[in-house]
Image (cartoon, rainbow, N blue to C red; front, side):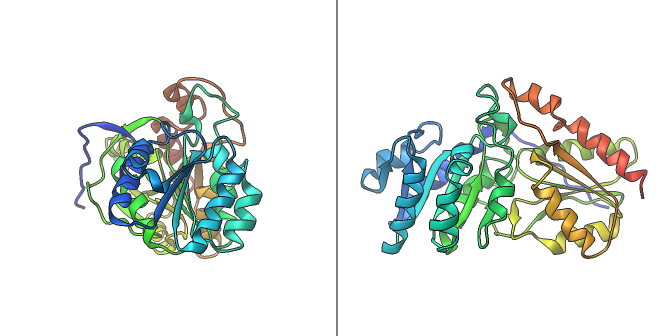
Length: 319
């Protein structure tokens, strides 16, 4: 079985991938507009603001207003990208998103940084771990959670071509940038990163690189791991997951999100409706976060490669 090796030359934050993608869109699509809720620097939107000032709107700390304005802009055929932290992009404005964007099927791109536990020092109030669940439950909402700078940039550009509401989730920390530059991003299509035969890891976001590392370490123990990057939580690529679990006979999900409502539950729902296989979940176990260094929090909350390895070994015993 041929195995592809993954390397990286630098670590980059996924939010910068969003910023670069947005600036490129400013150059290529005059209908793209950007709105921010007083977090332009944190969302890496300054370059777009400086180059296209007539298409940038600073709304201030008024996130619900931002969503309503964005929904209205679509009536004039604009493609609005809203930017703030994930907690303020979802939890604070859920009613506005549900009524004015999802129910109305408006072409708004809700772009959210600082998602998950890796936000770090800001603590539990800002570390939203429920956003994927909230957003995937909205009818018609596409939910995307890319894994590195290059993939986030590609996703940012690609969603401008999709007519409908999208939730794009990314983060604050610098993570390995290992996917191809100028890649073709396909909404709803998972990517098999590592081919294996014993156990499947279905992963998303910041945990994709941890899954690759886990596969390398498990290989040394004689365990063949298949790693699938599910960058689109909804619509879920059912075919790639079912084909893999049919082969391996067991699966582990890995995500920087509550195990309740996240990618893992979508995978579990798929499996029970098709062919049952043993499954384990790597994610935050029905908890809020806390202030701390991202790397320390990832270990404490069971989101490290060690946790993925432990779950793989556990699920293999259940085959």
